[in-house]
Length: 409
Image (tube, rainbow, N blue to C red):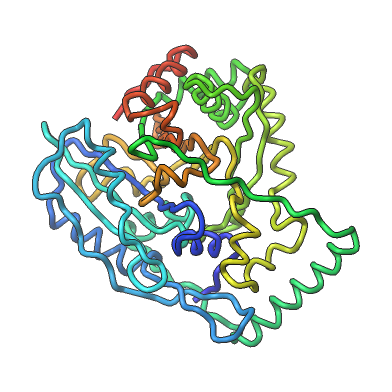
């Protein structure tokens, strides 16, 4: 199996309690009840697919951890009784527990009937296993029955360690020739007296309306996305005149199930519009966030976990996260014989305490199926957004102001 990259290991350390806990989640809604047999077949396919793996630590210092196939899986979890429609996201938020990418299954499939009809299905996985696009690829491979065979490791631990140390030492020498970089302290965790750390919302918007608005304002679907989400945070009562937005950038040259992404950022002011944000994003994509402090990023893979965490603490965390996952594969539009009435992709934060809030105050995930954009929002600012309903009101208030009609899950 292949070896972990720098981003994979950052998320692995967060799983070990070093950093903000994070898991990825795909959610499907159907108008009718999904039979347990259908869910069982999906569970079996996922078990044999690319999510069926775990992290193995190397035996040689400096060598990278690697993936090993693992067909162990958490049992399919089906709720005993229907859940009210207004509690769908609360139920979904609770499905991120006990995910272990190293010693146990790193993913879970759950389902529940919805009062009044229909079903909701959740697939949750450790972020160490994949990023948002990687999770979509993994599900596509499983649901289509596509054979998945990951490349075998061709280097021994000794060979990989030599390669890593060579990269680190040569890169560090080059960096030091430019002078000793100043140490940049990571953001300190925020604290609140609120009972809950996060709130959630999922909204569906007609794609034609979204794209038409973006074009009319001189932007793109993505720059409109950033514009709207920053407006939402300001609309919630956030007072800073500028917002720094982190933007994940897909770096795949072919479909792969891993954290194949880089991070960049843009600074947005209250006077920006989709056109100016478009230009800022275009420039930002040429300058990725690098860490730590000009040193080769592989340095994080040869240092002890806690030292690496201190150097990368808060990496990628800004005021806002805008993750544009893009078009979801057609295979995800139905579960067995059941067409989906809604699909959402997002990240959740299992076990996050109100006393350990990250810098990020609002995370947003945009995906598209057919003629619909789905906007999944996770607020991490309970002093300004205290409930799911408050988040919905903030979001719809901004969308309505731009003439975008939305439907809330």
